[in-house]
Image 1 (cartoon, one colour):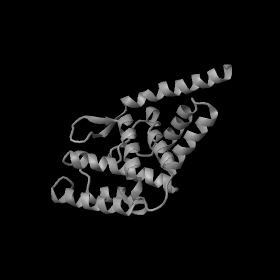
Image 2 (cartoon, helix red, strand yellow):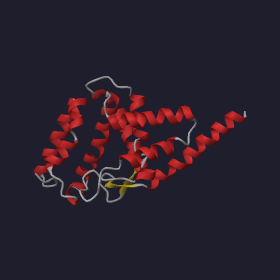
Image 3 (cartoon, one colour):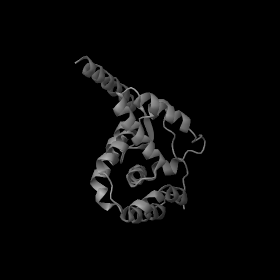
Image 4 (cartoon, helix red, strand yellow):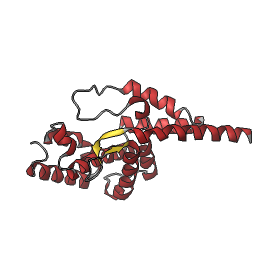
Length: 198
């Protein structure tokens, strides 16, 4: 019983720590809103999107594993912060900080769970497996949908071009032909409507 209670205490410490994700605000705004999305809202939404769109992948994926990746992929931002992809005023080289954050935060868990989550996080970051590629594609999809719903959103705010956005979505081309076709169509409409710079 003592060992089980020790395990439970570690798990609860982790649960308490990840509550901080609710306070990490992203640059993108909620759909049709001017309120910034927080990391928890983002991760939950991605897991739901993956569940709904998994039928469109070109290669088989382990959906549970993909959803786990999406739920934990931004946990490191508790320590490392959120670096906005299109912000050219910031350095995007925060890899060492993110790896240290992954070690610390997942390390709060019992060893078996810590190893599993850290391993999933690394797989997502390295983006070599079909599971990770699908998770990355979904992570790319949501902000595009948000910006579209907010009349350009951060595309307009950061003067992002069509080519910049398209290049950032190339993972979709490999993992899901329907998502790639949809992306190209959505981005072209955004250019036509003047909410994305050509």
